[in-house]
Length: 226
Picture 1 (cartoon, helix red, strand yellow):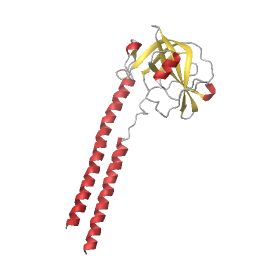
Picture 2 (cartoon, rainbow, N blue to C red):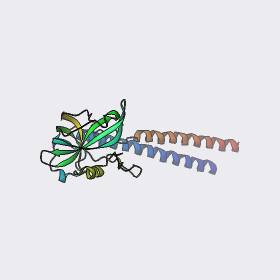
Picture 3 (tube, one colour):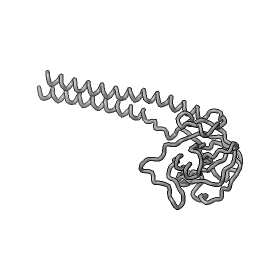
Picture 4 (cartoon, rainbow, N blue to C red):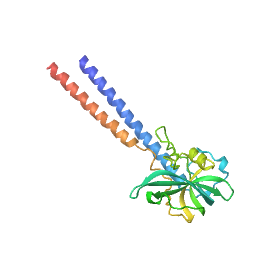
């Protein structure tokens, strides 16, 4: 009986822990869905004025929809990128002078590899987009190429230092004016991890396996007693 008791307690405890982990992941799923819905609402809100670029906060103003009017300066940096159905290419990060005289960064969008060296001289633009401070660079990201100025991530601080702008990035959603062949790639929530349902299913599956192994162990104990 003692062997039965130990196996049963171990089995029930294991199943309980695994089920609890699965339920916790389901609660996290509900929370993450709420976070994503709030971000999508913020992204899709009616755009407003940029305000004082020097007073923007990367946490408070993240994803805020804005309109900026002014001119690109012709100064830009390319960030290695790619688009499904098109292939490799670059995000065009341009220095932009607003009508108020502030210099900020604008992610104008994507150009294919063949258009890397196409001329993009200064041009008047009205851009509706979203403020963004992407968290793309890590310790494995190569530094910008010194010869070409090519970046491998949208490092707002590094791009701003390179182009002499404020560390403020507006990612274009819609452009009025000559887009010069650059296709906007608007901010969205596709890159936000949302794997909690898969994790929950994994924990529940392990609970089923644990319960099955416990049943098998109890059966083997009974066989030995017999």
